[in-house]
Every structure is written in C-alpha cells, then in structure tokens.
Image (cartoon, rainbow, N blue to C red; front, side, top):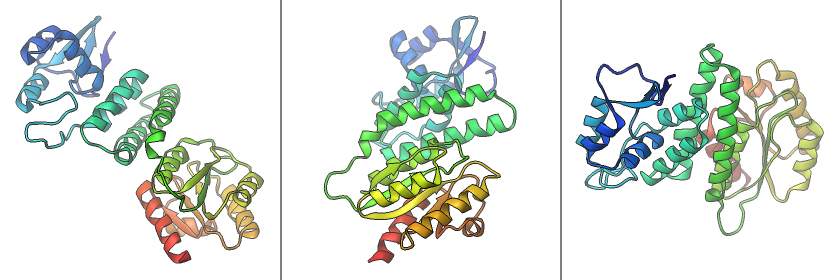
Amino acid sequence: MEERLDGAGAPSATMTLQAAAEALGVHYMTAYRYVRLGLLPATKVAGAWEVPKDEVDRMLAERLTDQGGRPAGGRVHPAPWASRLEARLMAGDERGSWGVVEGALSSGMDPNEIYIDLLVPSLRGIGDAWAEGRIDVGVEHRASVIVMRLIGRLGPRFNRRGQTRGSVVLGAPAGDSHGLPTALLADLVRGAGFTVADLGADTPHESFVHTAREVERLVAVGVGVTTVDNDASVRALTSALHLALPDTPVLVGGSAVRDEDHARSLGADGWAPDGPAALALLEEVVAAAG
C-alpha cells in the first residue's frame, strides 16, 4: 500500500529514509520527523519510506540552521506549508497536521497567517477535490474535524488583553450545515480585539436575534453563507435582524455569496469575500460608528 505525503507524482529517483538521513547528516528519527512535519516529502511503498533524491538535494542546498525552518541569515524559510498540511489532512493524520502547523509557526508565521495562508487554502484544496469527485466525502469530513481540533489548539493565541472593542455575533443561517468557516473567522475577529459570539452552523433566525440582543456593545452581525440554494433562508435572517436591530449592520460572506450585488440582494449591509476583507469591513463599521 502506498501513502503519498506531498501529493506529487512518483519520483524518478528515490532513496530509503535511512539513506536520506545519512546524506543529510542526521539521525534516522530526525529524518522521520522531517517527513512528519512535511519538510521532507516521502512516499510509503510496501511498508518502507522512499524519498525523492532531488528533495534531499534541495534540503542539503538550503542547509537549514534550525528545525524551525530558518535558513542561514535568518530569513524565514518559504516552505509550501499549505500543500504539506493538505497532504496530512487528506491522510487523516492529526498528529502530522499539528506538526506542520508547529513547523510553520516556528518558521515565523503568526496565528493570522496560519489561518489565512495555511488552514484556508488547505481546506479549499480538499473541498475542490471532493467537488471534482477525486476524494470521498468522508475524507473531506475527516479533514474538517482535524482542522476544528487544530483551531481548538490555536484559538488561545488570538486572545488579547485589555478592553474589548465591542461584540460581534457570527454564525451560519438555518439550512447551512457548515460551521467551520465562522469558527476560523471568529478567532481572527477576536485577534482584532472584539468579543465574539460564534453560533456555529444551522442557527435558527430567532437564536441569532436573541443572541444579538443579549451581547454587550454589539458592533455587527456576521452571517456565513456556504450552502448554495439557501438564499431564502439568508434573506429571512437578514430581515429578522434588521427588524429587531435596525441600527446594527448585518454583514455576509462565504463561498455561496458570489459578489457584493448578490450580498445586497440577500439584504446585507456589507459583504466580505474572505477573512482579511471581513476584518477590513469591521474596521469600516467601527470607523463609521465614530
């Protein structure tokens, strides 16, 4: 049985992991750690690891000065962290996935970059693979669960000391079963200094309204829309929120919202296509409120 770690085609020239370790001048277990972190692509064939010789040559050329991935001179190592994480998620390897995240953090990526440049692209790649019929939906679900666990470990890094800038309510509307996008966004918003009430997936409209009325210093309500053909539910939610809280901006985003015109047709006061845009939109809301 073959287990591929980098998603690439079979290499034309390979070497055993023991030979790779000797070529790199490291212990076998160190080389194995490189594999688990995604630093050294490898393929498992008939129970034994095979390493592309050109990957060993690449690592030798880089001569990393530490295990965190910083080359000589202190420059952050531009490793393809997202593709490495995607491969570990595809394999259902939670430990290896966290190892890739640790490696990226050690290389100099901050928590925001981990979410925006690592987790999101990996999930998008896996989602595309499922949509194209290249993987079973079980693989996609398993990867999503692993990412939720990664978020659980990374979440505390977004906590900020000091006074909150106000509260933001996030969630997916009734009929939308995807809570992972808002979970990712919730930490990014917390990192920007806001208190977040994340309602998760498939939230009834009345629960959105109830929570928005209960939180202190409400700044905005964000609705994650990732299920197509659910526009009627989104419109009913934005209408209920505007009726109950006429002075509160209702913002939408997510893969099922095509553009700003589509967002406006859903009754939204603003649209953000991704996490960074959502943070920028929140800043605009705060600035407009004075």
